[in-house]
Image (cartoon, rainbow, N blue to C red; front, side, top):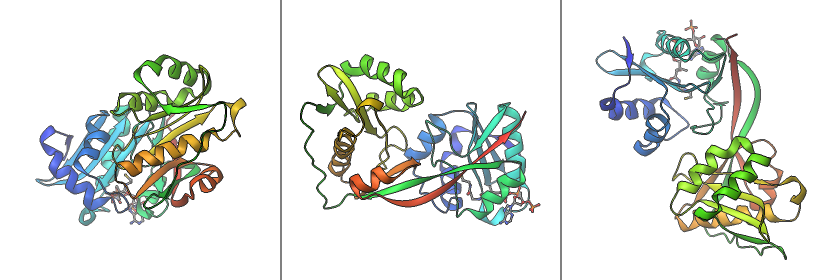
Length: 278
Ligand SMILES: CC(C)(COP(=O)(O)OP(=O)(O)OC[C@H]1O[C@@H](n2cnc3c(N)ncnc32)[C@H](O)[C@@H]1OP(=O)(O)O)[C@@H](O)C(=O)NCCC(=O)NCCS
């Protein structure tokens, strides 16, 4: 039977997701971030044991869906999906991607059953994106700041100027940058010319503690001056200081910049799916 997720389900839910998601490693803190810190409609399939789970969020996404490997093709996934879709009453729904709090930015192209499942339920492919990997161990990312500019870690006092800059150039990333400003230490680096903010880069806004980079952005008129490379390198150095051996540069379209700046390579490919509910 279908019922709402309860607080005490978390250990069983973690076990279900660890068994079901072949390409992702879920931990208790990550599950908490994905589900408890981002509430929506969370339904489980309960037959004495937890056999299925679906989590959807009102901003228009089916964020997680999983059925125990030994109980697939019985219709459990379909019933859960349809119940969550009905409860969200959204006009459009994305599959899995759920910015700003998401596990992965779409369907991993290798997850054959999930791709077929979402296609059967009327989701249509509209694009693709990549998660890049950057190896960190034993590498030196330090690089000089171009003359005339200052690059430094953000402080709490920078918040108004950062929010104004985002409003002007990168409005969709406000929520992620707010998380960076709330982290300790603040996981955001800024590039200035005098008092003028020209660019930013940060990490740990999503999938915290896993080496999750981004977003980053330089204002259009200051691109090409080398600021992006310095901002990126500051974040990579922070990851090294955290003891990480590799990091993820997620949800990337054009990857030339990252390949050149830090030797990042394509690690995962995702298809993006959307369903129009009219
Ligand atoms: C995707 C998933 C939730 C589907 O759960 P399920 O309970 O097996 O789904 P259903 O039984 O309702 O299947 C519905 C339809 O999906 C398609 N489908 C699902 N698995 C399939 C498979 N292995 N091969 C072909 N079609 C498949 C079929 O069209 C199926 O209908 P049919 O059985 O009438 O042919 C399940 O395969 C799963 O947990 N996968 C791993 C988790 C995952 O990748 N989640 C997405 C990222 S969070």
